[in-house]
Length: 224
Image (cartoon, rainbow, N blue to C red; front, side, top):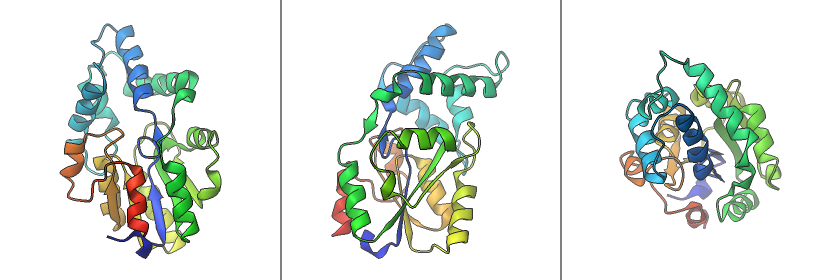
């Protein structure tokens, strides 16, 4: 596969460009401990939880299944309240210690200089997403930043379909870190590459049947 044939790269943000896995684990463990629920024991537990959640996914970001799997009881607390608490903790704490994955700037710069337009498509709420991206000197690489209108992470697909229709985009590829990113790419009718350094295990990504790279720096190899 040669990414030079694409006019657009659609990037996922969290776990693909932005390395926030450790912070996500810290935040969710704060919530679990507060309720007397066993916290996740590191990255392996975290990835297993998301793998389980994604096994139920059908074109919807599976946040509800993830929360159920790790022990939250929606009979005691509404899902919406738990998500609101998570988002509040995520943005109020040490997420500023998170950063871009090594090699991100070089890949974005190479794509831009090759004439490829770049878009971020994320399940994050748009305001929070723009705030995070603004902390790094990369905004100029993107033609559009597309997030959700609320914090409950329901439909990247609808946003992506609308954008592609409005812009008349056909030759695009989506690069992400989860099975759901592959589902989004399928729904948009575009190719997909996955990178297993984020919120999904390599094993789950390999089951999608698309190229799985070692890290984001490998994307450059497809641009030669």
